[in-house]
Length: 278
Image (cartoon, rainbow, N blue to C red; front, side, top):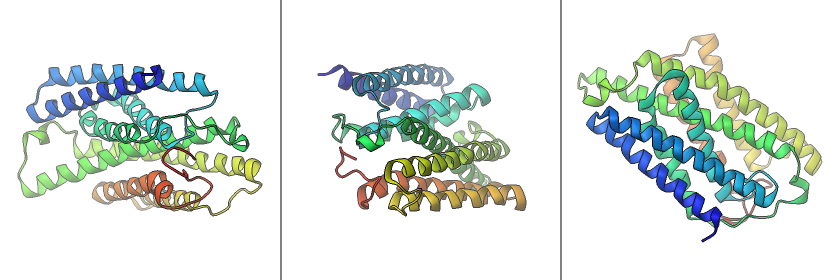
């Protein structure tokens, strides 16, 4: 077993343990278990950093040349984003809902070829970490917004039916979740916008055109317009609460299709020819 494979599998196991403890904490209301979950999550994230660094040292470029690397990088970005938000807002309970998403991405990453794929010479540019880094960071923030939106709808449903469970008392208030949704949107949208702009500049240098209506470019634009509409609605119309939560979830669904669905179902300049090659 190579060091690369060992690090990745160890990271996956640690994330799985952290997820299991976080879910146990939510179901059984055991704060001590939650603290252990976060310790494991920090440990897994540190290991994940080693996975990416080891991959970079082996290839010489940001590990995003294959579907495996992209899934791994996105999981890393989601966990890192959650940990940063937790340090700022102390919303530990969200870990029980955000870590399963990262774990699923890691599991998917373990099912596809893990061999590093040589990068096309036209793509060997410093624009790679700039464009892709911005895009994934924006996507990670939107993942957190979608989780906040889902919890908002869940808590609102409990209140309307007047049937609250023990989970209700562990969740942040509706106002806190709505504020988190707004904060994520205000951070994620500029990152997504910069990701699209830098991608267009890079495309012009690599392929001679800023925009070619490649399927992934088209869906990225559709996703951008959806989040732009949500941001406009919040700032100009005063959208709050349920409507904003639903749109945050729909936007993330569209984002996931742009990331995975387009690569697997449609062909284009950004698609993976197989599950292992771009």
